[in-house]
Length: 170
Image 1 (cartoon, rainbow, N blue to C red):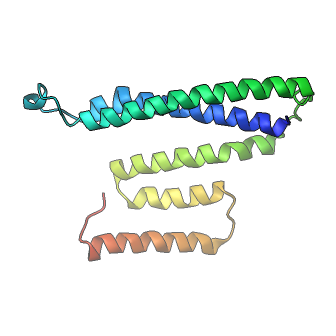
Image 2 (image 1 turned 60 degrees about the horizontal axis):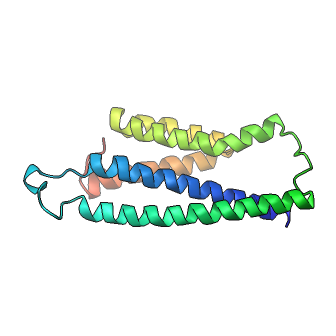
Image 3 (image 1 turned 90 degrees about the vertical axis):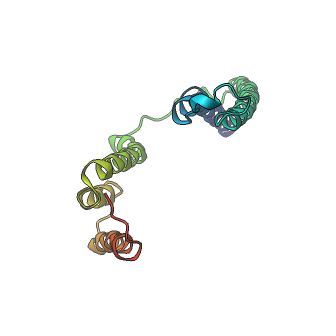
């Protein structure tokens, strides 16, 4: 067993654990909080929450099975990799540039979340004007014409919503 197979088993276990957290969030927060049951329907056998809970429980069973399979595969891969000596070598230390590069997806995600909050709070135009250069600079774009293309696309979307669909953006 190689180190690559060990890494794959570790990644699969991590994905399954993330899925477990998401299913738990769905069952214990999303469904009870976001799907309201009218007072008149609370005593019924089938409520607006019945089908989502059914699907959530099916997903939870699948995730638990996946967790077990991924855990077993990970333990086997780790034992085999240790026996083969594949895990004995130390990973080279990351440089500052590599650390920053590994954070870029998280920073872009944070900017997108801030953009969504900004649109709801102060409207479409100001967050869009700020967000475009922030993301393009973060991903390393230096060509001015790409900034122009994205601004033109944003202006076209605004015009379509405003004049064609007659929908006022926030």
